[in-house]
Amino acid sequence: KNEVEQSPQNLTAQEGEFITINCSYSVGISALHWLQQHPGGGIVSLFMLSSGKKKHGRLIATINIQEKHSSLHITASHPRDSAVYICAVIPPWFEDTDKLIFGTGTRLQVFP
Amino acid sequence: EAQVTQNPRYLITVTGKKLTVTCSQNMNHEYMSWYRQDPGLGLRQIYYSMNVEVTDKGDVPEGYKVSRKEKRNFPLILESPSPNQTSLYFCASTKGTVSYNEQFFGPGTRLTVL
Image (cartoon, rainbow over all chains, first blue to last red; front, side):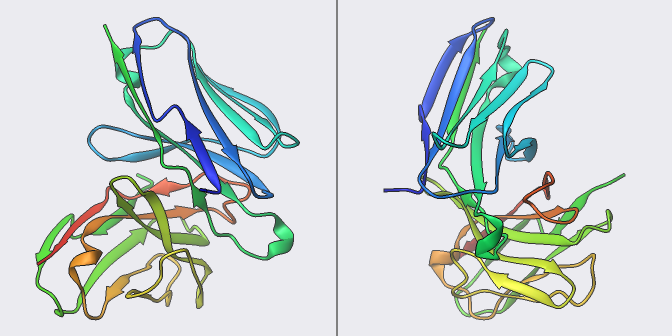
């Protein structure tokens, strides 16, 4: 079993729909990253969070440390949101490592 | 412009021929890292460096070497490439530590080993 699981693996939506992508992890963490990989291959960092909720434009990321779960929400989805969304976790500080553990990604396609 | 650059972007080589993929960042970041991405396996960390002369293994370090002699550069060295190292490689950098800050990724290097 992977230490970081994402669901769904693939997601299609109509423009305007509300999207939720989930990330569950089985290890302790100090932080979690959400990344976006565009169809051309480039990767950008969307959020880094260790508690609570962050919002940037139409994107909202939440994390529940007790439940070991994070969600990425996209409101009013648009075809340009079509990408692979990847979550990655960092082990806690007392493990003395800055290694990242990645989920395998969620491929989102938004149709007009 | 703040950026992470990788060279080359595309490389086709043969088994056993040593190669180096360069990575450079102009943001004075402490943390740098190399990842490989394979279909069905996602991103996996190869090596990372928390500062000059400090490097640590990621999940898949076998067959790779790195060095961090200067803060801005973090080359990835394949001493004797093999076909199972055919992959898409990304370099990334972060200010401080990834536990607190976002990562900046390079454009990727697509490597094919014949």
